[in-house]
Length: 282
Image (cartoon, rainbow, N blue to C red; front, side, top):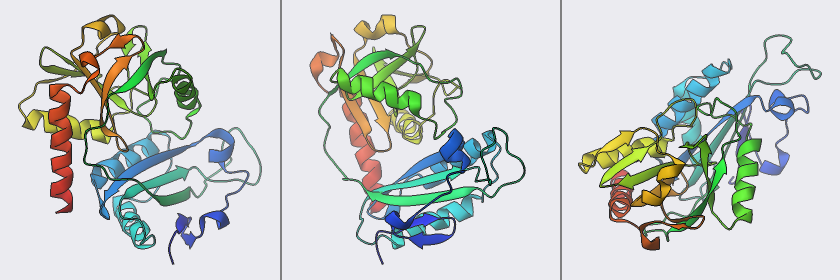
């Protein structure tokens, strides 16, 4: 069979998957999610993604299986969806369900575990430089937890769409944090700057990998804040995520970056990222 999802130990068609209306993920957004890219049916950087899943679950006090379980589940998802060559594995784990709605859990619960594998177009080109828009970061202060509570992120994404941008460029009191579903990197005088991995950002696995690739290329990476006041002085700007990989930015509202083209450093990192994918699937 193909096109199956995993829910609490069962492999079923997506339309047959059901959870309790009293699930705490449904009622209180009390859950964690994670996404693992798969290239040519081979998971990419899976151990790092699953370690982040474990950290986030521990941060909100949900007991869940160890990494061996998740790695096996990734393999099973791929096997149960033979028509998908490249895609995204999605995990969601909530605290579970009780018999009625309570603000505080009334006792131990069995976590709800859901997983799916959906197609993603694998690309080898240089994406066209995109526009982003500056927005106040209205989200909560534990952005390092990959929570399913994404209302703030979704409102910001909708505002970016209204402004004709692919993603918001978020800031808190002038300090650039990240995007609604991405991390940002600035290039100035040949050096790379990105927000530090503190509670104000979700430290992306693609972010981590791009930092490593940059260092292999001999580029200096500064994990320190850059600010709204500096945006007009940047030589380049790009964002990273599991789905977009490395995306050059050519415009921030009315500010044109790198003459609207993909900058030299950004292109080096796109090429390095593609090379790492080729090595992975070889």
